[in-house]
Image (cartoon, rainbow, N blue to C red; front, side, top):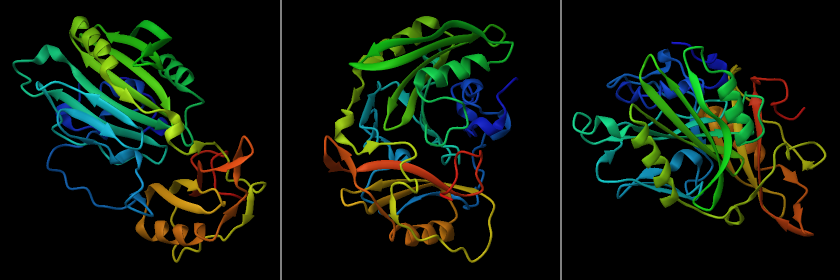
Length: 317
């Protein structure tokens, strides 16, 4: 099976969801070696965390009453009684890729033609793909499909649930599988719905059912601004001091309040001591307030500490 290089995204999917996650990972940078088998014990190391438990985070969504809901993305995706989630996704990668939900038929032997649903998100502050929006990201996926995949529909702008999406369709004749990828931009993330299955009619029904999804208005959240944490916008800064060197990248999303203080930090991947030291330092940072129409507003931005996966994503110099 041909896949993207692992550096573009590390997506772990449970074995039972290989059809929906690892196979669709051809477009998302997964490899079969990333799959996590049931009953495997993962040793906690670099892990997502946040400075408070009240502020929503991307990985904080959950399945309830036959719907996936995410307060962070303002998203509700309902599905029928014939569907369920057996396994949760892995923690986010240090390049900002999230497996938010993996939904499959409750009775796979009876409803094998229903397909699978993977809900994922790519943080555009930290992506390693040369893309700035949903169209560019899906175009990158398309251009890097293996030779055994055929594109049925190149990335195309469509309107779903009163929101702009980009759609990409492709298939593998050898595997007898088809994919429908729908992507939209929320809070500087590209949120993706990946439908996988043998039946194109079933996949089209899933695509049409997306009109039942509910998405909040972007005005409900802080303004997201890439690269706001620059020396030009910083008034005060304290560097974190680490007791021992580690060589992992630590991507961090922060929310800056109207006074220029860091009110929340979300660590996509960090060891606990790293998160604590960085949190202590960030509490002393002061930014110029971000102005919208002349008025200060909250702003959400990203920065990274430690080893950078690429030159232009790094902690402030």
